Image (cartoon, rainbow, N blue to C red; front, side, top):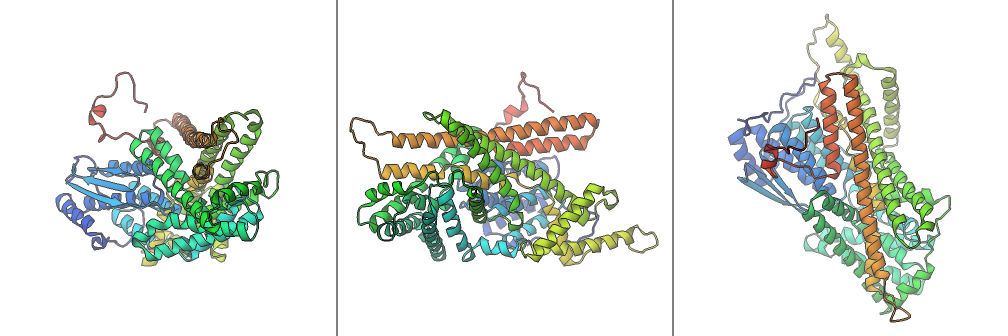
Amino acid sequence: MDPFGGEKAQTAAVNRGVALSERTFDVNTLPADMRRVYGHLAEKYGEEYGLLFIFTMRTAVELHRAWNMTLLTSNILQQIKDKFGLRMTWSLGVVKLKFRVEDGGYELHRKVPYDYDSEYQDVYYRIALALIAGKINVHEALIYQTESKHGVHTAVGGLILRNFPGRLVLYPFQASMCAIIFFSGKWVDAAVAAICGLAAGLVEYALGCIGGQATVLLDVCVGISTGIIGGLWYSHVGEICLSAVFLGTLYWFFYGTAFVIGLLEIMAGELETGVTRFVAVSVKTFVLSLGASLGLMMANRGGASKAFDDSQDHCNDNFTTGEWWRIPIYLACSVGVLGQYRFRIDRYWCPLIVQLVAYEVQYEVFHGMKEQHTSDHLDTATSNIAGAVGGVISACALSWFVNTCHNFYSARLLQEDPNESSTLVNIVYRVMRCYVKILSCLRINRKSEIQKLGMEEKLKGQQKELNDPRHPRDHISLDKDDEGLFLETIVSAQAINIWSILMPAVYQLVPGSVIARFWFHSIFPEEPENMTVPMTSQESVFSNLMVISASLALGLIFGFSLVQSYNYIYGRIRERCHKKNDDLIVKRKRQVNMMEGMYTAQQSPDDDPASFLFPSENCNEVE
């Protein structure tokens, strides 16, 4: 029974040209509340409908956990809902999620903590796209989600950096590089920041092992340990730039991206989540800053303010300016960020290009304008807008390049239209095949990547037998292991999530450190020489904070708008050249719709059904 009376929620009939064994998702592995709701839906509307609700909810939870991007998550959920006619609504908060089905007849809640996970965000996104496109059925989609959660589709190197204790190597590396490239530190400051970073990682590891309410103390404990180590070094070993050490170490824990995403949500009309996120990241940053200040006070027996102020004389704003090693240091910092974001190691090159483009555009524009804007913040605003636009355009261009190459490569692996391969396709295939073999020798990529080449040979042989009228073969079949490789190839062939390669670049452009500077100025206020002179340093930092945040959010909007406009114009031109090509029209609309979900809150008939029943007389829908 179809609850909407429209397209039925049926996904089992998947035309792949290869006979795969039937896979069944075990609903007994679900939590009790999801299993209960599934039972009611399956009894009323059939198994497929119930499983699609489960898949949609799990997709929302994992995307939200990995990225906390409500705009993107809502977009992909709406696509699933529209495709299969689900009578389902949701409320995505900053932490709490609500899912309702059958006009609120059933409602489930989840509390989802924020975490960095670029790989899982991308893979869950691709699974959803594969299901929507009809490449896999809902059972296969749910099983693939479970396998991904258990690390089945993650390389060994990625598994090491995903969790403790292997993850500990990232903390000192990132802290030391950030202290130099972002916070006016020198080599000695980088060394101290590395020690503080290792201590911070050990604190998080220990509290995570304890679990429970102990994790609430993470921010203050990390701050205190950083303050104590930095203060003891400054007092007993040598003079350092304490702000560089503190900010470089705490950079890992600053949710600066959440600050910009909050403003992006506010601009998109999602005021509730935007304002909540804005306040939450400010409070979190204050706790980290206060903890570091308390630790500094303990280490200096009460002289924290004087030590912090005096250490500013040992900071060097021009330490990296004009030096040839500025870019290598930035790229090293970027590698640490990608490790923090749990990005796939074999694809580091892609976000590294986006990070470098965004940083260089921002850097060059700022230094080219700062002499003419010494009394305002327009140089900062312009450079941030330019950097964000450059990051978006480069991320979209790279995603197109990667998607095109993977489509060629996957089509060859799956033996889809092998006789129509052009010279370009053959070149791309050979290059990617060589690339896979090199990474496999280095043990960087997934073991399954090299196994897919063996699967290709089996498919090619069976395809040849199938095309031979003298051979008795009437279908293509694979064993259990090759079936898993086949499904992994299908999912990997889906479009890459643009935010998965863009967010690390935005993370390095955002003002998490500016928020911390604001709080440090509040904790250690400067004493004016003349009491009649108003104290403007805190106001200046806060003004700079707003300029940076708003300009970065605007840059993201401008960038996505430009790419969306290009896709629309290019799609229209292609449609004109290929008259009445429905596939091109569907592809253009899908791209435009997907791009809107990257930076806007899309309207849904569930928000205001009346507005969809009677379109505005003054506006004509653009097809």
